[in-house]
Each structure stands twice: as C-alpha cells, then as structure tokens.
Image: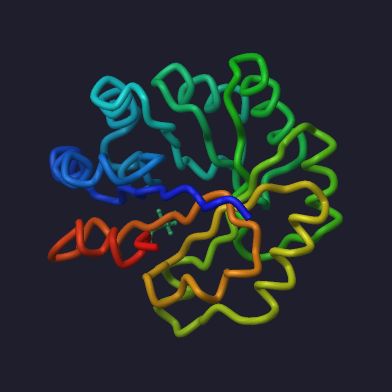
Length: 210
Ligand code: 5RP
C-alpha cells in the first residue's frame, strides 16, 4: 500500500492564527485544508490567501455543501481550492452539479461521511464520477465518547471495494494510526493534533515517522 498523504485541517476562527499554524507545518504536509470553521469565520478569503501563499500544495475547501452545488463549487474553485467537500446527506442533484463544475476545472469533490449513508449511496456517487470520500468521526461524536471500531473498518473496506478513495479524520492522533494499517487510506486529516501541539514538528514525526 502506498503511504497515505498528510492533510492539515485549519479549523481556526481567525485567519492570522491559521496562517501561523500552516507557516510552521507546511513543509511536512501534502494537503492544506481550509476547515469548515475557518471557512465560516473568514470566508473564501482564507482559501484565496492559502492558495497565494502555498501554490504547490493541494488545497481543500471544507464547505460540507448540502445544496447549491454548482454555485458553491465555483466559489471554492475560483478561490483556488483543488478539492471541495459535499456532505453525504446532500441530494444526488447537488453532488452532480458540484461534480460537473469540478470535472470541468480538473478539480475534485469529496463526500463527507457523517451520520446516515449506505454503500448503495456510495455506488451512486461513483456513477457520478466522484471518487473521493472522507470517513469522518465528528468532533461532537468524539466528544460524546465515540471511538473507532470494527464497524468503521468494515465500512472503509467496502467503500474501497466500490472504487472510493478514502481519507480518514476526526480527532486523529498518532496513537490511532495503527487501527487503519489494513485500510487503503489516501490521506489522514489531522487538525487539533497538529495545530494545537506544543511541538508541531514532534507531532508530525510521531504521526509520520517510519
Ligand atoms: C470537523 C472537521 C475537521 O477539520 C477534521 O475532523 C479534522 O480536525 P480534528 O483532527 O481536529 O478532528 O472537518 O468537521
């Protein structure tokens, strides 16, 4: 299996604070994410600024779009994002319109997997040309005690089998990574474990050291 990419999720409410975090961490990461919290707080300005400062990184705009797929995909990609997220509960029509914009611009849509969805849904996303999803343990679910389990790993394998490339996120720490050793993971997405680490370089090493 190829080594997964590492994605830094910027979930700050202030763009200057997000930029401070990425300034330290950008040499160690493959993908920069303007997180939902940052997008809501600072708007597409955050995505534009990140694109200007880091032209060579893959840039994700984590809007978790539920409607207006075409319009929001244009906003995200005009600002410089390569990938944009759409929530799994969105209607297929929203996924299709976002995917049409993405495909025309050589960009990609990622489906955010929260709450209720099925493998049959995933097959429909693949039919639209969507090949990426993010397997997500939500912040609130994590705070209420939800842990990673065999059910998650089984679903991840089933998603891979239907042609979905998976990123994994949700309070990921170095101690969690061994759980996913048999899963084909495109990227691990870490926010707090990196951005709030007392020594970010040490945390990167703990996550990514051989
Ligand atoms: C929250 C998100 C976060 O960006 C993602 O879960 C990574 O953050 P953390 O590692 O801090 O959980 O999408 O909805």
